[in-house]
Length: 438
Image 1 (tube, rainbow, N blue to C red):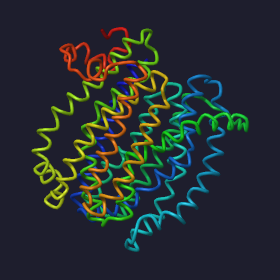
Image 2: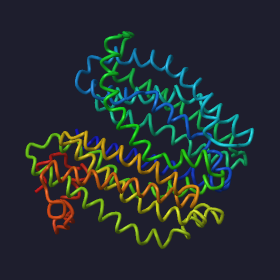
Image 3: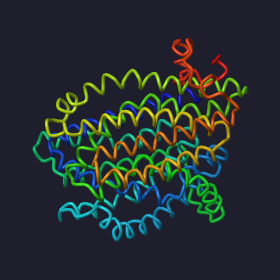
Image 4: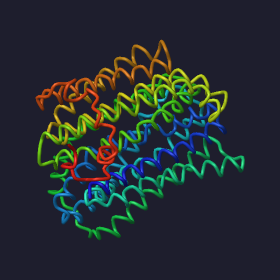
């Protein structure tokens, strides 16, 4: 089951990245840096508001559906009620607050910012439906519901571009349709697979909220570390700078796909391992594999950066080269940190991972305040690298200390068996039995 889930996660993430790259390529060609920046400003805040409004409930839904699937009717009914009430409240609050967070923008962009907030309830409800599906290991349906939005977005942008109608406004409408279709597919999947009945329950809601709120701070810190650079750019930078930066981010994220898949599969493998020493070896080897992969990618991509940007997106995006190079370093550090954090969770040390993520969020915030006004998008990229480095350092130290390991000897020292094909297959989740490592 774990191996199948890991493969589904990896395939879904790969398809999403490819779809995102299509829309990024088309959007960059049609809109240029300024238009691409305007589009990011429009779509930046609704996912953030939806994540904040969820209060950790999607994680609680995954937990309780895995533990007690018979709760499905109560959880589903509560999700509907919660989305209607909290979703509408969130839209109202966003309509008041978000316009003050995006800086001085054109009248059209501000209108689209307010219009796109209609996506907040849909994104909130989809996250809750995915919690129900993933908790019962319906990763295929959950992945399809998440993927559909990106599949609609990529070809939709391409069709509008070929027809000569791709603008910031038409792109916004396409994204609203894509989010709506994804949410409807998530709802269909829950009804088809889980057959919930209408059974709202206040006690169930309190139980779910109690679990969700305990995970909430770590989730917020994790999101802050990942996206604070773009949020602050949205408030402080020009639309051209934002457009350049988002393209650099999209390209650098492609290098994290394999490591992210390993990290997602690692936690349950570690938790289920019968012998702690084998789980420790699996975590350490996963970390070394991520290091090897990024070292192999870094040199060629660093050299080819300006040529890639010119070839893929056009001459106007070549100024993103510096930020892209720093983000390549940041992506490697992030991948390594996410693997160590996943291992810590599997060993039952969520407190250490939360400390690592919170520390990274604080350091990233301070670095952005200091570097963004002075160095622009390069300062934002360096801030991400600094924050991710703090997360990796604390997580590594915590892993070595809690497991009583030597950092170099047990975790970082290259070993000949790291490159054996069977071990690579195990780390990728193709073989789900953790006892196969050794």
